Amino acid sequence: MKLLKPIVVLIITIAILAWALPNVGYTNYLTLILAGVVLTLLEKIIKPILKFLFLPINIVTLGFFSIVINVFILWLVTYFVPGFNIQAMIVLGIPLNQFFTLLFVSTLIGFCQRGINFIL
Image (cartoon, rainbow, N blue to C red; front, side, top):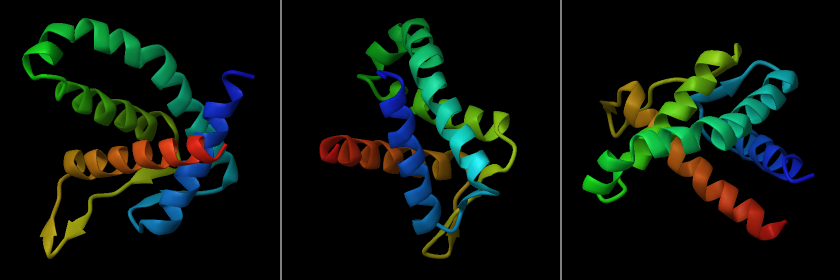
């Protein structure tokens, strides 16, 4: 049950972001569920390992390197889940590369997760 709530929250979050942002997409509901499960598992298993491995860099950068870890985790989800994609954005006529798009979407995922967890 402890693992089910984060999966459901991430599925809802990804669905909301795919509805709100034209550059986040999934092919069908199975892809949406798979993306939520994979993102939850990567956040629970891989993210703590990466935080421990990059702890000295994270300390030197005063915690800002954890943002890079979040972007990497989200990129892994787009790599491992076929049909789930995050395309580069264009903001005010300026095209952003994949890193900054993933950074923006990762930040929105964090905000949505906190909001949905607050509601639930």
